[in-house]
Image 1 (tube, helix red, strand yellow):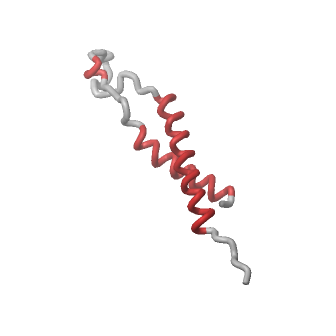
Image 2 (cartoon, helix red, strand yellow):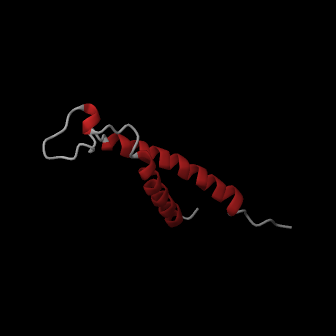
Image 3 (tube, rainbow, N blue to C red):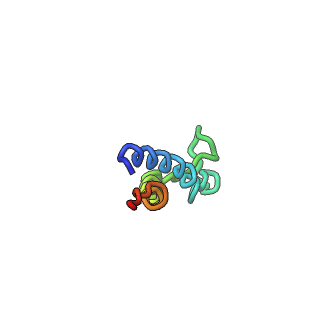
Length: 82
């Protein structure tokens, strides 16, 4: 896969997966009984964004690796010589 195509595909996969990973493990301030005065009770108490970004990066790399495999072996077939 050309490097620019690979980079663009990884970027798209990363952002798409980010929206799938963000809701995992989120507990609101109201659920934790730790409502900060002046904030929305439904806001996350501990969003743990660093852990989620790291997990998202690893998952995106695995998905990109699978996509790259299929690109190389099924899409970009080498020319057969007769």
